Image (cartoon, rainbow, N blue to C red; front, top):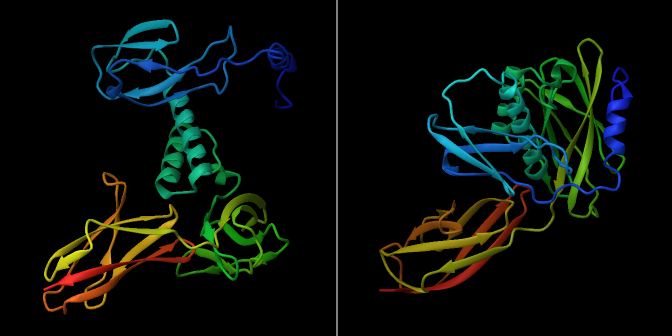
Length: 317
């Protein structure tokens, strides 16, 4: 509650909920669901007697849709244009941004999500952690996944920032150096060797050219364990000139996967959603001598930990 707001309404609303439980598993069901996407509830919790509202998008106007919540059902037309609720686009944009912020909290920052947050908040005029650079410049922390030891911390900020200081959870304070050619702030730091794997926060103090100081907190992940690698082949015997189809399971943090075998060109594997694994192909050279060979698969994660898996194959004439 802000100091300028009247206390009575919010206090009464809070007191009325004491001893009451919110409605569990309240969800909106829509017929012709394929015509709808990005549907979000506007309230986190709904108590009996209160109102819940959903905001979303439909792709094709015209016709009707049926909306069902528990035992209640309503049918409405889908107009191509309507000005009956002028605030609806802004309410949807705020809900969409909240969903993107939750995604970033779970999975880490990605440029597409940040760009969408900035675009929506600028269009509909509301503040987010990424558009508050009108009052506090934003920072992108890289990398998020590091190993204990001597990693590099890189921070991307708004151009108005003149200095950046990082305060790490293990007591270290480091001033970052600005790299002109990369438009990035950077420093090296020693993460204690005994830091347990997990998620940690680093606090950033940013000072702009007018002397104003802003504070942000970013998370990074300590990862010291190499990726787990499991190699799958359809069979273990191949003739010269044949193509070996490779399927490899690896940890979620894996960045690159390469398969190597003596005499053959390396094969780079990529994630295949339909197969549910990383897939690639290796051609057995026609000139390779018959015999048994080791196929070695190397996986490197974003923290540069390296894991390997091996399988023996027999090359036939």
